[in-house]
Amino acid sequence: MSANVSSFAVSSPSPAPAPLKAERIQLQMQQLPGWRLSHDGRQAWRTFRFLSRNESFAFLRRALRTAESVPVAIGMRGPTVSYRGGTVTVSIWAFDGSFIEADVAMGRSVGRLI
Image 1 (cartoon, rainbow, N blue to C red):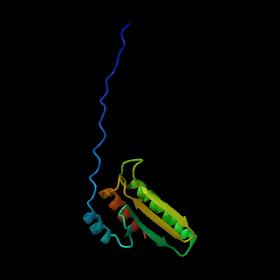
Image 2 (image 1 turned 90 degrees about the vertical axis):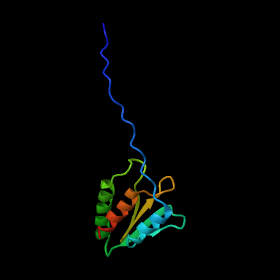
Image 3 (image 1 turned 30 degrees about the horizontal axis):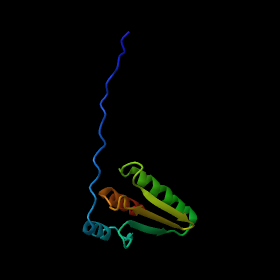
Image 4 (image 1 turned 180 degrees about the vertical axis):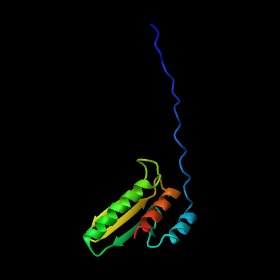
């Protein structure tokens, strides 16, 4: 009896996105109104304020959907979102100490929601 073994191609993981240099991050942040960069350059955040909890919760849902649509390496990147009453804060953390273009794109996309 012979075993029929099928071969399949194992794809190599896609190359890691290129990290942005500190000067480029500063330039990008200037183009994202309301976003702030921490002193150590490892976190970018923006706080959104709303008149009611319903408005802030609706924004929170839109922000999470937007974050899911930005192509990033699954399990490695993504925003931290906090919600409290009429305030939603979105934080984007530098993974392995650096931001990539997808992080900036996420900040831009979330900022456009208001």
